[in-house]
Image: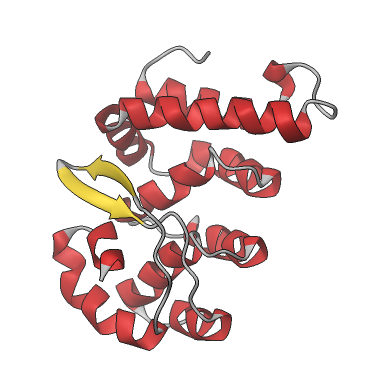
Length: 180
């Protein structure tokens, strides 16, 4: 199953046990990233049954956190936001790809929540991930600019005032590069 490739190999057993409980999900092409030298394929969207997914997020240990990660990719934006808020309370390095990806999406409320949490989050893990994926971060930043231009420019006429830009700038600072 494609979702198994979204997590480090060390979590393969837990992922294999969790996926049957989640049920099936349609597949969208994943996005490829590296974390600690390991290639991961993160699902672009998941379509798990909402209640099954929520039940799985309540599982103890890594299984519940894996379900939260997959929930951040769910097609329901409200469910994604709920999963993000819970995931930010976790200190597992392997959750980083799921959180960072949301910084280049269009849901401003999630971007603001992540941006506010960045200073207290695992800066070392974030920095390493961002340095391993420079082209990916460039893509996220281009998406943030595009979403600002399409949906938020009327509210934030100046790019520097847009919360997504501030979040991207914080990520660039962690990466050690100057934001655009």
